[in-house]
Image 1 (cartoon, rainbow, N blue to C red):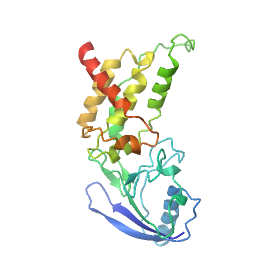
Image 2: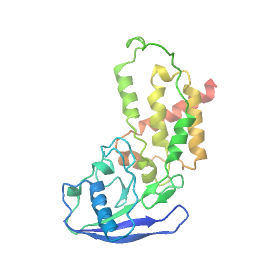
Image 3: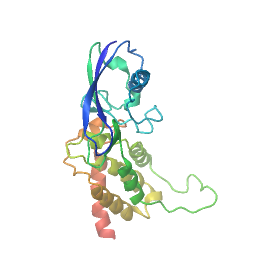
Image 4: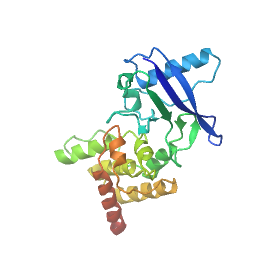
Length: 247
């Protein structure tokens, strides 16, 4: 398969960037999208050119580091799929593929397609820890959690912090990410002691990082590779109201 690639190249956060064209031939339909970029980089190195910088790690849709905007879609055209899970069979002969980094003030470009997403780490740190008693593991049934509650908590915990929600949002809002992290522990007894402190700390840090406000367009849910639901944002708002009355 022959493809025409338009890839964003940028030497650093303060350097100007631009799209550069690359032609690829003999691309296998069985390649993953990142494997295709690997092959391109091997070709560039053989030519003495600088390879394209992009983030990756697990290549199993778990770590969230494969953050790419592909033809205007976060992680590409497939739903519920990270970039590393996208395969070239999704494209056709002579297709033009536009590849960009996340576009958000809070995610500055490091180089080429790699962005600095440590803002998410600082939001997580602002949430603090949960109180636990050290020693032997507690008996599994000592804290009873209903099936529906535990499933909702685990659905929220599936968030991999990739930033697709921010990249897809017209306001670069991080509300879906923050709401998933808050919803996870807010619904479990282990997260109860620091419940109010956690939500206030994370939302305050989110605002300080420069993320935009949520306007409920639903683009974040559509782009999320783990299909985190908008209902978590509703829960986050309720948690903020609750924190205002309990603290």
